Amino acid sequence: MTYLICPSILAADFTRLGQEINNVLSAGADMIHFDVMDNHYVPNLSIGPLVLASMREQKLNCKVDVHLMVKPVDRLVEDFAGYKPDFISIHPETTEHLHKTLAAIREHGVRPGIVFNPATPIDLLDEVIDMVDLVLIMSVNPGFGGQKFIPSSIGKLSKARKKIERSGRDIRLQIDGGISADNIAQVATAGADTFVAGSAIFKSGDYKATIDKMREALAGV
Image 1 (cartoon, rainbow, N blue to C red):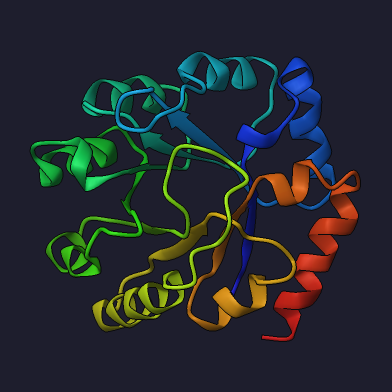
Image 2 (cartoon, helix red, strand yellow):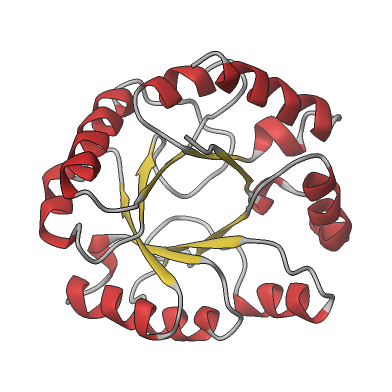
């Protein structure tokens, strides 16, 4: 299994964001994670599509996954898709017509993802599993970085992995919230293959050492 480590720029130093992104990529990151918050669906306000536009203008052509925590979501799907992220993931609670929104993401040439909050039933995945390329399990309540991992997320990961395997489709299973070198092997054992880490990387002081430590933990799974 190919594991992907995805630093969340929500925890980066925004006064030198371009350099921060280059630094984590040089340290071995696989994909940059965009946490987009609107102070409506979640109680925080973060970044918009112009940040991704600036990255592309500066030739930061790394892999990007965009996690939209906004309601309504459809307009920002279109805005972000224009800057060619690899994935755009949405919460089912943010759209009146989930199938339509997921289809629109793919129509823009981007791979769609669906996000499950800690209290969102995983069985909803059965209704759209043929439409998504990424399933994101939130192991914290969305809205703020630096939260503690919610242990019940392990069971939800395992259920999601079984559903993905039964589907026979190539779907990445991502985990976001409280991920560090201390628990990354545990969530990988439960089925995750794509790991979002914000504070654990950007607040560590040594990005390469932290990412290397995560890789070492994953090597033992």
